[in-house]
Image 1 (tube, rainbow, N blue to C red):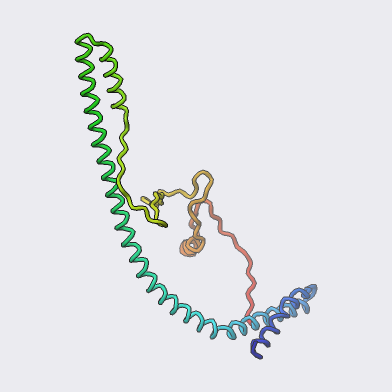
Image 2: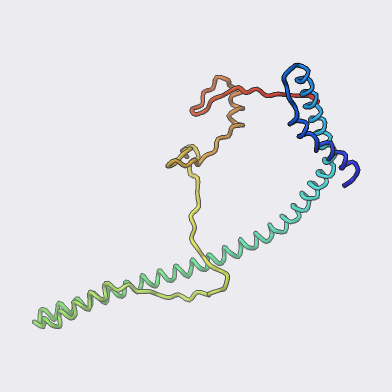
Length: 219
């Protein structure tokens, strides 16, 4: 710790202790308290001035390094997005093939069921009720069969696909502040105060404008 930093540190360390020792019961003590408050303000300014160059330099370095990192990670993110898009497209194509194959299998099963039903009808007309009953049972089994078509998908360790839900705002003006007791909108008090300054008579449901005393001290 440099001598200057040590001096500033020592000066700030005693501020709280002095503040806790303040007792105001007459005008002299009131004046003493305000003097201490001014000294606290000056000390705070001194602390800010001492650390500002180092903080500014650190912030500049941090900003530069962060920008360089982002330039590189943006390239990686772009590459990741491209590859993910192609993988998802391939998987969707495979799923579409599977659904088409299942639909075709279902169509064939339905046709087979209808063929067997026709044979059952012929057997019944010819008086062969046992064969007709067997054919009817076979037709029912075929019609209720749900075909499962397997489409070859590569299985890669560490790669998986999932379906997630996302929030899409379709009309911002219609979004309520609360749903089932949960707040889903935040109140922008700064924007409200700006509106109030522009139009002091403005009435906003659920909002009150109150006056609070604020003590200001110039060092």
